[in-house]
Length: 102
Picture 1 (tube, rainbow, N blue to C red):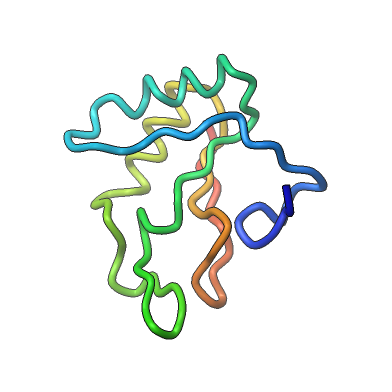
Picture 2 (cartoon, one colour):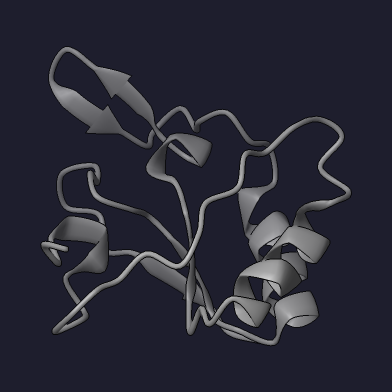
């Protein structure tokens, strides 16, 4: 996989799995544990969770689909005992992916 934008910190990047967020978000910590059991070393939360796609690209000034995404990332990181990164393939201009440690 091309290690671009949100994955640029890696020499190589192989997706381990994907999960879909649904409300209420109380199952996300368990989904993080499942990704770890499948071999994930890091969990990335998609850019749309904290940013919106506009005609000019991604913009995180108004937030994204998830309220309190940093708290959600912290819950996942603690439950899965893995770092959780905010950002995937496409990022807002000037944004550096935030890593929430376990």
